[in-house]
Image (cartoon, rainbow, N blue to C red; front, side, top):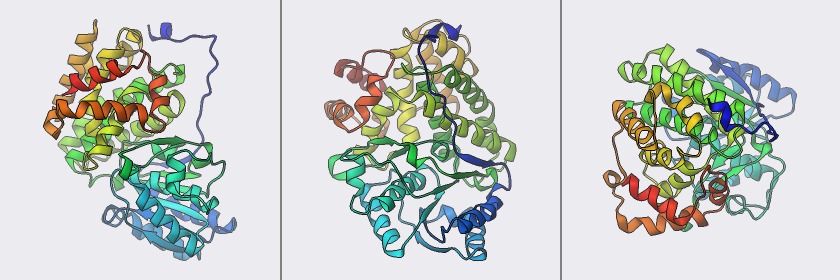
Length: 395
């Protein structure tokens, strides 16, 4: 039983903090949020988004109407890309400061929300830059209020204290985790997610699965993280095929969004280790690489590495996608078989990585700010040799 992997004499924090409006039609709760902002004097906001999705989904029509109705001025920064960069965050922060923004509304997937969290910090620390945040030259204790309107079912960033931004000139993709960047409000509306392509649908859902595999097997995992992990994997196993079959299946989108939200809470409590620590160098080197795809390519090898240390937990949480498993090789093989079954058979070589890339990737895993912290809580000792083996087995 997975309970055997829990040390009852180790005290764990259990975290849930953001107010989440969840369900079909939840976008309309932006009216209540706008009213609350106005009463708090938050009458100027910066809206963080990508170029298209915030409008194509219909979210912006509702948000703009609510802001205008409540007399809240806004400026929109729509330059956020997948794997957002410090360059974009610094640009947006300057716009926000010049405008006098007092809060941040992020509309999109994890990238606009993570960039928005970063801008929220810089609004409170106008003498700092995104590089200061992600090279850890200071520790922020406050940020402007954040609203995360989520358009994907994967990252979970709308419910937790994490953000990830790339420093492109150094090929660093660090992660931060501060209490001050919990969103005040989040909106998860499945009706805004039906336009996700099959590829995006796969990758974001695999992201959620990776979150919980890591969070439930880290050295700081709580029983709450394990409980959430099993439910997340169960929901993704059931509803991802349905969403791939019919993109407009609102029930499938609802429960995938719920799984992703739970995943965000899960890794807020159990944190992350190998898969994310090793994926960040992949998408830092190749910014066009989808984060979820990078995770998918690494997951079978990571499961193989950690199986002996966390076998009972892995048997429990992976059963919905892998069935009964009795060995590290079987666990790895069955996870890969599931990934193939949902249309993600890729290996690193399929995305252009070769043996020659491995030394740099290993180096980045150990030198990128914050990633050493993730590796330190892996359930097996993370050495350069073990990390190299995971990369090599993922080729």
